[in-house]
Length: 387
Image (cartoon, rainbow, N blue to C red; front, side, top):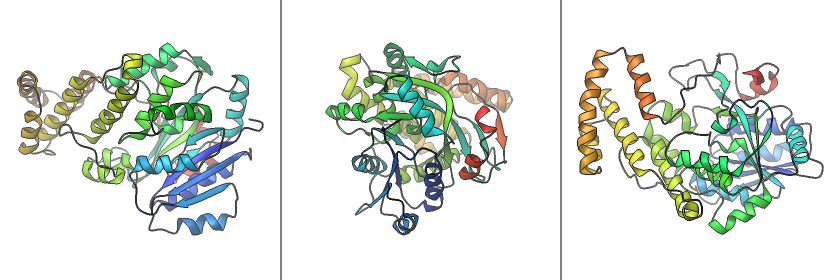
């Protein structure tokens, strides 16, 4: 990117073993115009000692005086950055080889867009996903606006707003991971009029959506340039293993729960409410609260059938529903129990998935158990990019 510098934000807490790998994927880039901002969220590990041992002036380290909520620590890292473009990398994620040279090429070819939204790979460590105990590597490139594109293109603003409308309806029109979005300093500064760049309990859900709304020029590149890592210390681990409360504690900054159910929907709701408050009148955006209640009801009733929720959970759910919805969902639950007994489990779960319409019916090819860790993915990147 010529004289353009990129800031990589690496907020961290007690995950030094993974942080080391994330740092290394940046240090191995052939382009030297970068900085790493490490905001150590009061770790018990000697993160500062490790950073000092690297003796690299491009890596800035700060430790918070006390443990912060994840969103606050992300903003703390952002405030320390000075780059012309910013990427929230994450301490269990990493770049792929050639990331910086590719971004430099795109910035120059497309006249410095406000936002570059890319594809990604997903890497789960062994022991993270019960259905894939050996871990896997797969494509994590999903955005409805990519369509059949194979080359970078300028995303029209109307299509970006339409995608945000879809996520306000609790439908995953694009991946929220901040690692997919390289954001210009200019866009970050313009968005300060609406408060902090990262907001809500799920800061990536908010910031990705807000940037799509506010960016004057968005470049979409469906090629994978980063790896999203899911480790035994990641939020995704607790979600995959139905350990909801531990996942909430990991994020800190407890938000009020509107209804019993999955924390994914609670965090999603908090981000969409922040979007509605900041941009609702400008773009005519409204959170589909009824869809939220439907999805939480579906989750709780299903969890009750599987023995993962109690009668008290169901009672709390139903107490929070409007009378008409309560009657409707009770009847649907009775029918659901009958169908769950009558149909093969795989067929029933497929019907439930389609009926909810929250996540795409998308099953990319997986490389099972073939990588040791994220740096191993980086070093062996000859083949995985084509997943």
